[in-house]
Image 1 (cartoon, rainbow, N blue to C red):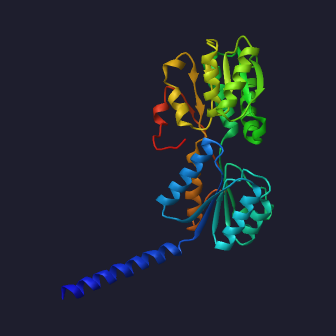
Image 2 (cartoon, rainbow, N blue to C red):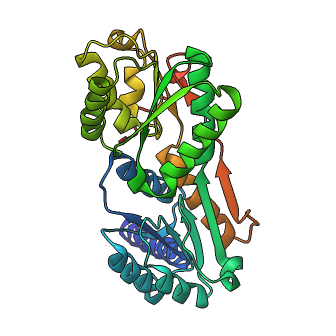
Image 3 (cartoon, one colour):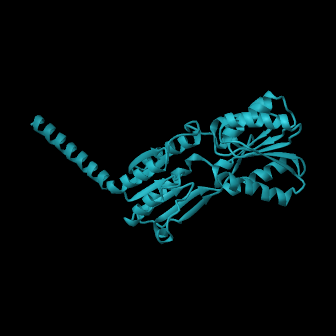
Length: 316
């Protein structure tokens, strides 16, 4: 009798497992597309995307791509797999045709950070969530003025190769400086969103300028390199530096003794914003109404509040 009961229990458990599998398979497929990792922030986006999808127990497929052709092929593959929504971080131009193919099939496209330029007739199925690049510049300008006053010399570490990202951040900064500190002397150099570039370009700027009161850097990686250059040059004139992105290593520098005489700050543009995209795409598929365009507010992080932003589980 016990043997029969054991067999029945095992059979019930097996049937239950099959039922759970069937339920999981009934969930709509969500494709998640991101660029291949070229920057710590990019890796953080992929990490948080997968974490969110797992926690929500979604039926999803996450892939990364190195160029527009590869991302276009992945969008087409998602169509063939029957995806109902695609969350995409479209860092490449040239994926418009594939995106419109998906939209023609009624697939939701949820853009992260940037938006694919498709025909306006697809607007009902297009969504975008991004950080506030212009607002980061505004916040950076106000922070620097708060720390050094309305007069002085500020070095702008521009990144012209990043398209609208740096352009919007710089515009927010210069527009605000023109309004609240019109006598500020602004010097602009070109750099990259890399700490090595921050180190090399800041070193050159320090050599060319015998006095710099503050630095408007647009990225935490750039700022890490710039801070190294300032310390190695034994410069004491720089009193504030900004950043952007949400790098935990950079956050850790804010309270280090080596930088106690410099207000080290960052404007948030956190990689875990992708979580909102995953959640919203799932909500749309469940019949909820979500705004088609969402811009998340930026916050300034420095030694006074950095403890609120530390995340030991973050890969970036």
